[in-house]
Image (cartoon, rainbow, N blue to C red):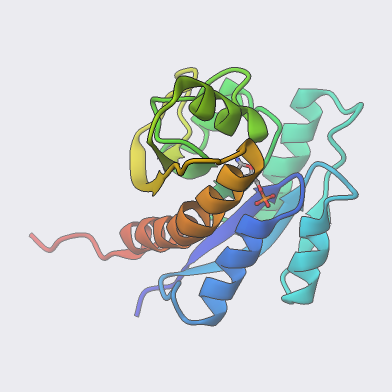
Length: 205
Ligand code: GRF
């Protein structure tokens, strides 16, 4: 058996996506990967407490008032110390520089609460995504897990899941449904998919 892919999850807030990754791991649904580190840029992120409750090392690298380059230097050092193979951005609100992203080609996954290319890019975060979907009147939305590339707003799409919009939906109701039906299901699946790819033995010649 090859070694498991070592995963770092980057968070900024509540960490419900992190929670579902950890629960999936505990249910044995992440056989090719292991979450070895949780990093937050925000010292009061509840996600840090969640990580500790699940016995996963959690560190804060304060983002506020730290120059981007220095923040990324500290982050890179941590990732190296923990022997991380790939990263998952689970509600991580800071933008990583092109220089940082270049060092992790097809190794940074992000989850976005819409069906990309709809309602994504600059300014589309949190409730704003769902407000825009409701304002446009689309009948279906969902979530997307994609790789983060150097191209702005770009990256190969790995998995998507659709969610129905129902009469009477508010942005808050829709956000909750997208999380429950798509994000919390999709992110653990994507983590396992990438872990599997990275630990697969190269095809014999
Ligand atoms: C999620 O909606 C995710 O799609 C977005 O940020 C939110 C994070 O929520 N990128 P949580 O911190 O995982 O609860």
